[in-house]
Length: 149
Ligand SMILES: [Fe+2]
Ligand SMILES: [Fe+2]
Image 1 (cartoon, rainbow, N blue to C red):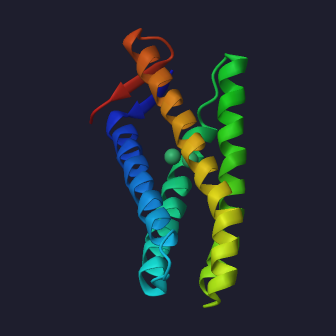
Image 2 (image 1 turned 180 degrees about the vertical axis):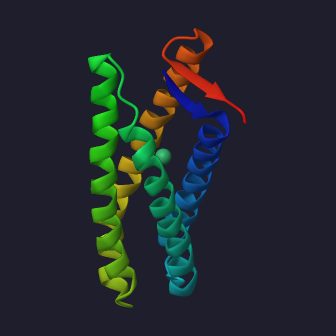
Image 3 (image 1 turned 90 degrees about the horizontal axis):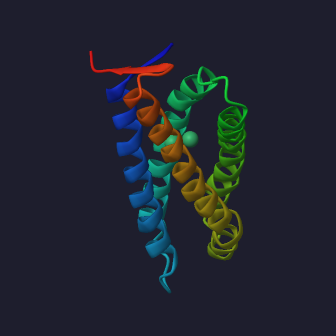
């Protein structure tokens, strides 16, 4: 029997919404003719810190989360792989944003940034499906117990 705190899943879901909001904020800043580098750097810093903190709490959660169902385990393995990819893209962007070179920043955002953003959105969607699974199993009182203490 796997046991999870319901509060923990709620917290991860809330952070997904915050990450989604920061992605939109950064996209809006990057499409302006005149880049406001001070704002862009501040939003990126928030986004990057939040993702690192969020994923480092998710890593042990997902690595414990292997059931007898092979398909389910494949989904979980994929989540762990994508965490590594996300870190790589974030690092490339961090270097670009600290360069103060507007052309380099724009080009990095159009390449690594866009790729990272779509990967992140797909990734959070997949994680949400896993949370739904956990809630479903819990409703059926099989294998998983969610609790509120
Ligand atoms: Fe994640
Ligand atoms: Fe997540």
